[in-house]
Length: 205
Image 1: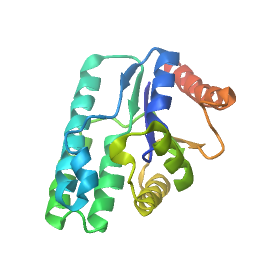
Image 2: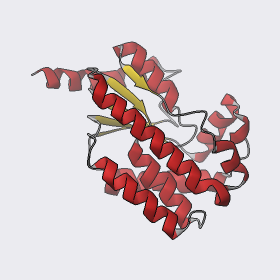
Image 3: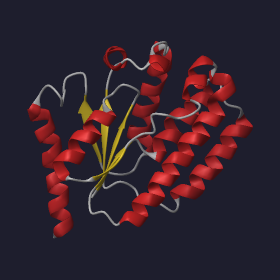
Image 4: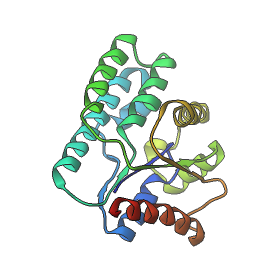
């Protein structure tokens, strides 16, 4: 069972990944939190956008190669390679923060890699409004995130919704983070796990 958790900055991806990893004793792949470019990126997006996205892409490729080699039965991944390309890199290009030459180079690498890797058996999309994201970002207190522009988060949300509705063609479970808090409400987590349990059962048939 290969499960991926998708969602905007501050949506709770890492928390859910860790909760499900404990529940299913799965192999966990967390988003890289110490990317060497991320602090510079938030100070000067135009200067560091390509370097940041290539660094994240390389990290995701490394994770995927490890996943394929590990042979673990259950894998849970915090953010996918598809989000890197269709949400973050594409958004930076449309905002004029990544050149056409750079995005074309990036997407060439992305398309090559995605022909070689499997899609998740289930993608869990944590959908959250900008106020919810801002609240969570402030709560976790990462210094480099404190000045994230709300319009940037709003654009990313629009990209996520478009990607889920019109581009991604795998199985998706949407969790409305504005109203479904899997940390505070155990029933929400149980509903998510019920979907995963059904998936595991179908794999054994």
